[in-house]
Length: 219
Image (cartoon, rainbow, N blue to C red; front, side, top):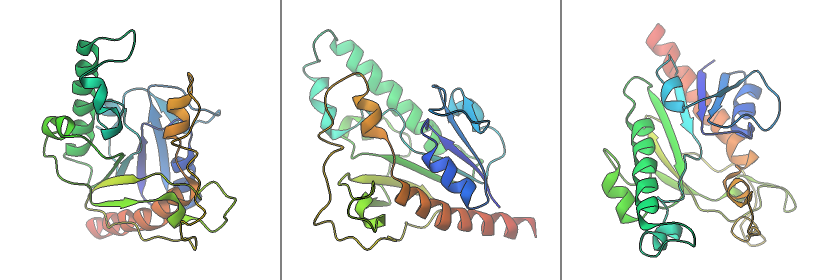
């Protein structure tokens, strides 16, 4: 059993996948959990990650200013916002990514984020390219299920193996509903919600890897 911290998650999808595999899993976010649970820590993940964890998976650190899709706002801000706001949020996002990526005492680290632009890469400490890119449909078996979606997902990994796809879908019928989410106050949450197939693969493959590593160190 591994002690696992799921950072920047309110849905509990990844936390519950690790719990289902028998791990001591906790989620953490500035916001409360979407559903009542005693396994969610409301607070800054940078404070919680100082504890003793075998594996930390930071699923969707605030990435609006880090991603290629939002780089245009660094030149022409959206209505009601200033360029100073945009660059300040970029600095804050890069600092959070840097903190979780370079935390020294947690042996196994996974950070999920979309593709980044050059300004974000330049601001992240010890930046390196993502270890792998996956699509949700690679981990799904039901064409009508929640995993049959197109959403390029990048993983930055430290002492973890790349995930091996577990699904039977080929992507031909994959939906694009994540990118086509309707504008509104909750659009960010819909776009950041994670996929159960990838979460199950993480819990199975990375949870087992972290458990073996912990047992070897304890022996």
